[in-house]
Picture: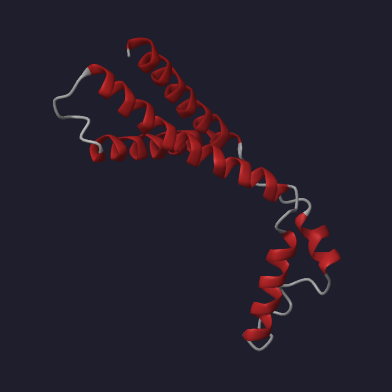
Length: 131
């Protein structure tokens, strides 16, 4: 199951990079330095997106968004005429204690994001050497 997440993250990054390449007309005729510049840009975007989502998951695991999630769930239960009142903890402390054991995985996002950022740095260095 874990390998599947890594593969999905790498494929998602590759699709984002391919969309950037297509959007910048990478496959048309141009100079080598322009191609390397476009490759650097194309790998930077998925690196930042995947890595940024991974960092958000880390922050969320730390409990930063617990108050916001509790408030939204609590307000939603009131708007539904207390249909979901049993699903939401009575106090914020109880909600935090229930959430404490639930930790989302983030390694696959950080590793795939780091891989694409590394590719971007490599192409940036190549661009600087060749220009």
